[in-house]
Length: 247
Ligand SMILES: [Zn+2]
Image (cartoon, rainbow, N blue to C red; front, side, top):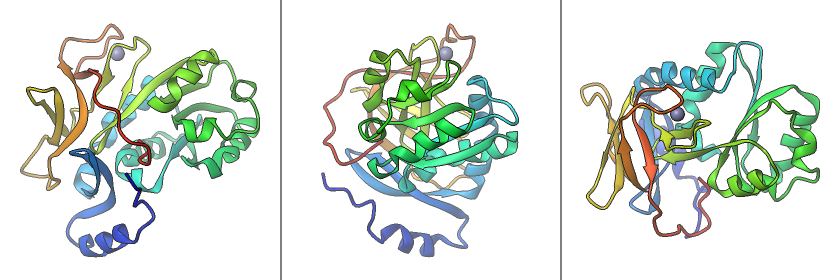
C-alpha cells in the first residue's frame, strides 16, 4: 500500500469542513485502507476527561514532561490526549513518528526529565543513534506501537502497547490483558468475524461516520485486574497489514 500522507487532500478537506463543526482532519484505518476522517470539535472536547484519566493512570501529574510521538495524520487519535495534557498542566513535547525525528526524541530524553513517552514505534527505535536504555530513566513510562513492543521488551523496558482503533487510541495497562477503550464518546461493536467497528456514542451530537476497523478481537466488559471498569479489546490475530501505513 502506498502512503498518501503527504498529499494535499487533508488541506482540501480542512477547507471543506471549516464552519461545519469539524475542527480536526486526520486519518483512520477503515476496511483495510487509510481514509481521511474529520473529527468534530464537540467530540474532541468531550473526549478530554477520559484522556485525562488515561494520562493520570500513567502516573502523570502537573509539571511532568510527556513526549508524544505521532504523525501529522494521527492528529485525530492524539487530539484528546494532547488537550488533556494541556489541561493537566503537563509539559508536552512532540516528536514526529518518522525516522528523521529519532534524534529529536533522544535530545528530549537526554535533556528533560521525561516521565512518559507515548507513541514510540520502530521508525524511531531503528534510527536512534544512542541506545534507548541509556536515555530512559527507570521511572519513564513507555507506551509503544506494536512495531516496537517486542524490541523494547527485549531491551528490558517496561512497555504498554497502544493501538489505533479507528479514530481512538487504546492502551494496555500494566496487566497486559487487553486494550482499554474510550467509551466516553465512542461505542464499539464486533462483527461475527471479530472486526471492531467504532461509532460516536451519542449519535445526536456527533456527526462522525462509523469506522469499520481492521482490528479483530473480543470486547470484554468485566473489570480489569488493574481496577479500571469499562470496555477492553482482547485482540485476535488478523492478517498482517502491508507496510507503508504506520499506526
Ligand atoms: Zn487494566
